Length: 259
Image 1 (cartoon, helix red, strand yellow):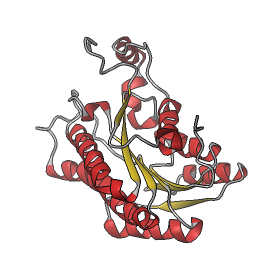
Image 2: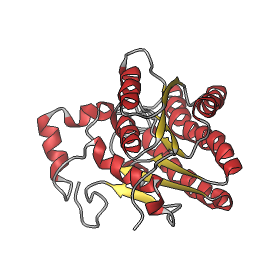
Image 3: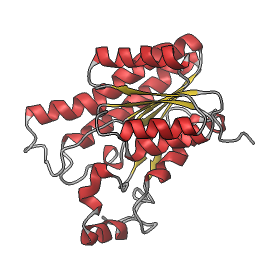
Image 4: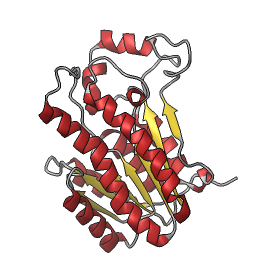
């Protein structure tokens, strides 16, 4: 059986500073990859701390400040990674934002643009810029982070669910188009993950209890619960999988689940 290794690979992880992105970056490093850590926030010390942690593990790394909604910044990010690490074998698109509690009627144009430009357009821009590098190499893996609300609507999610649904179709379209270059493209659709990103959902014990009760496995997920499937998709263990949407939701989408 092929092991879940990415030895001698170079990975780019957006939204790497914390949460799911951080856990995936560490999982890829532990499995042998050199990892470029990319995030829009670079002045709070978290990105630099992660960079130091990865280099202490004996791997090359680089930290890059980037706003993925900006084409020029994404293209610069890709150039910096190739210059520093030589190639790009794996792209993990974790960067994203949401406006908690907003319905679509409450979502003004500015908030809509911010969410769609970051989550959907930003993922597209990263896939395009990195995909061009991978096409030249004739190999690569792209992993997009969608969401359970990209599959079914959620209360107070607003534009976020639409951006995440778009990522699912983006993943499938790219899987079709990039297969000729031996590039695999898959997505992960997490449920409620206990990160700072959605702390408002789980910090309150009463709300956390209600959410956990609605999940068949009886608990919310940790970032590591997403990192392991991401490592599987990045490795040769998933060599015949492309265009797939992997639910990492504790059974949230199981028919008959009440929520």
